[in-house]
Image (cartoon, rainbow, N blue to C red; front, side):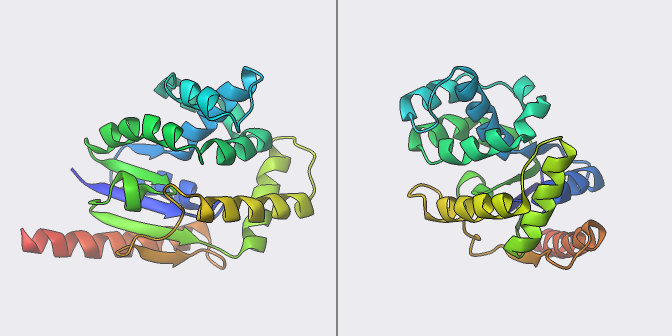
Amino acid sequence: MTVIAIDGTFASGKGTLARKLSEHYNLPHLDTGKLYRAVAKLVLDRKQDPADAKACTEAAQNISAAMLDDVALKSGPVGAAASKVAIHPPVRAALLEFQRNFASKGGVLDGRDIGTVICPDADVKLYINADPKQRAQRRHAELIGYGEDISLKTVLEQLKERDHRDANRPIAPLRPAADAHLIDTTNLSIERAFGAAVTIIDAVLAVKSAKT
């Protein structure tokens, strides 16, 4: 059972890359960020505060796989709330088992602490990043495509705020695993990024296979 862990910054392209890799290697895919978005949406739907750890934890304990297909999870407000929800240790603890159970059967998981916390023994670890301005442009185009009215400047400000919060939270801060392979997608198309990832993954798996 092969496990591929993909971490990286917001809007760096890791989700798109993870989906393509899951198809290429015929492995199930879990976008772990959707778990936190689902919690955030449930909290917002209940008119509760994402800063309320107790409310967020209760929501996290009631998340199901079916909720992850809701297109509303991609909205800007839900994404912003998800970053706030994710800082609560009890929320992360509540979602830990869900993620590890998924990984136990093999798969491609993308998020922010997959290689460091969720699957520290993953067969291959990738860390995806890109220049903040490039990431903001990608996210802005995505939100406009969803019909949201938001400026590129606002998206960039929100992205930088999210980067800071993700990197500085006390529990499972965003950072590359010591054995992660770094891919900078600033100047890469998704196809070139996919090619780079496949080259890395095939090489790592070949070495592991040779040792067994």
